[in-house]
Length: 106
Image (tube, rainbow, N blue to C red; front, side, top):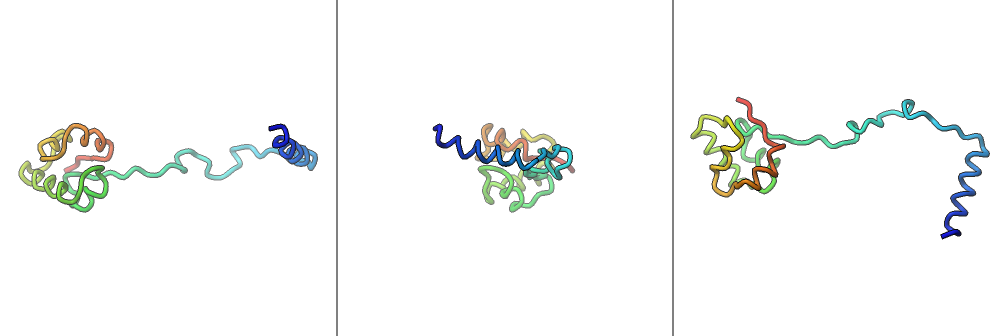
């Protein structure tokens, strides 16, 4: 372990001896945590196609997405996310896994 630290100490000593100065974080571009996170995909279940719904929702394939669209048409549109529980094959666990990815807009 001591041998592994020696090169690190030598390198840091040379770095400091060369007059290196620390750059303030504010001077570095795009270090915002928001800029580094991936955008979360959502789907509006009142307007999304079967392909869009199945691409976003976990555990929902194209056939299940088509069933969602059928229920949407019967209801005249969803008013609550919980109405997805009326689709055969979508239970409480599937709904909870996907709640953050679902939007309802008319």
